[in-house]
Amino acid sequence: MTISALGINHKTAPVDLRERVAFSTEQLDTALQAIRQLQGVDEAVIVSTCNRTEIYCQGKVSGDLLLGWLAGFHGLAPDALQQHHYVYQDRQAISHLMSVASGLDSLVLGEPQILGQVKQAYQLAKRQTAVGGILERLFQQTFRVAKTVRNETEVGQNAVSVAYAAVSLAKHIFAKLNQSRVLLIGAGDTSELVAQHLQQQGVADITVANRTLQRAAELAQKIGGKAHSLAELGELLPQADIVVSSTASTLPIVGKGSIESALKKRRHRPMLLIDLAVPRDIEEQVNELDDAYLYTVDDLQNIISENIKNREQAARQAQVIIQQQSEEFGDWLKSLNSVGLIRDYRGQTQQIAQQQLQKAQQLLAQGKPAEDVLQLLAHRLTQQLTHQPTQLIKAAGEHNDQNSLALLQQLLTRENGGVNENNNEE
Image 1 (cartoon, one colour):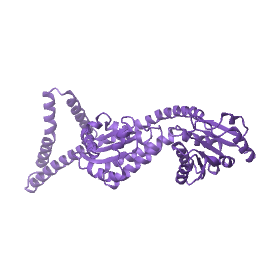
Image 2: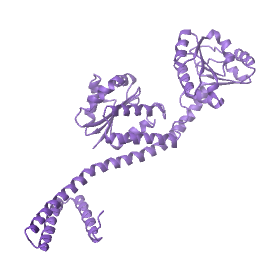
Image 3: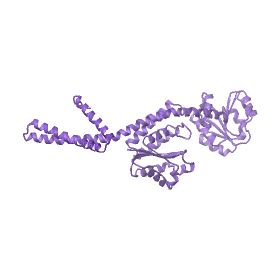
Image 4: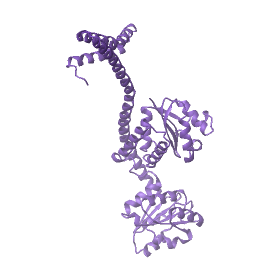
């Protein structure tokens, strides 16, 4: 019984290759049905995000077979993936899944979105009946591990992206961030990320000002905000509690004078200004004004660098949790291999006992003395139950198999111990 993980991620492959092996939502249904047709695959879950495509399987299946299937499904030659994939089995596969779900294998260490994506992959596979008893238990334990990592370490507590750091800074300064009015200057990717993080914090009053009004309107529509042109900054600045600027301008577009004028109109209620642009969008002299608090991308980078160190330390703590839990699951998985052996052995001995009991009952029915029948029953049971162990001992002795002899000796010693303890059963 084996658990396998085959994957391609941001560490092993460029983005264009990751895009070619990613599964769309529509493809996943077909893919789960197809992969279960592979010889040796009993259960399967496919995790597919922008940064990784990973296949988790239970059963006896080789990494080469999985790689060939993944390449073939997407119309690629296996050689195209050969240098960019990884394969883990059993405890390594278990530990990897737990690390992924806990955010320890992400592009941004500790990011929380991956746990939701792993849960979605598991739920989809379950709806397709591709999840059985083994992967069911593995993924449920993985979700518990990820929760423990979140609760007992600080791996996801510190901002490590500029956009998130900007919002975290605003949250520390404004106790009721959701009641603040925010002005975004610029409508590019960074501004959109900032807007998303603000919305997650409950901020509803967001205005977007951009050189191109159409682009401002597109972003404003996504976030339910208002769109304006840069020409309106003079009117917009006094209304803003928080200003986040990120444009491609080569010259500052917000000067000391405009902020000084805005503060007067605000009756000197404080303003937080965060300049994420390089070169700067906001004149450095704004810092000279009372009630104006200006932070640049360099200030945020210092915060981020410190937070990365904190996350890395937390990640080491998380790895201890994951190692312990993966070993625990691995031990449970190993125990399943003995369950069938125990069941078969007990069934065999019960069958032997039943056969000999029937023969003894027949002899008693024929009028044979009970004492003779009991002695014969004991002799036959002894002969049949010791035949196979005796043959194993002889074979181990002939081949000087010390390991087998030691195991058999341990077994016989325990059995003798059981006889000496008033024949108590376990």
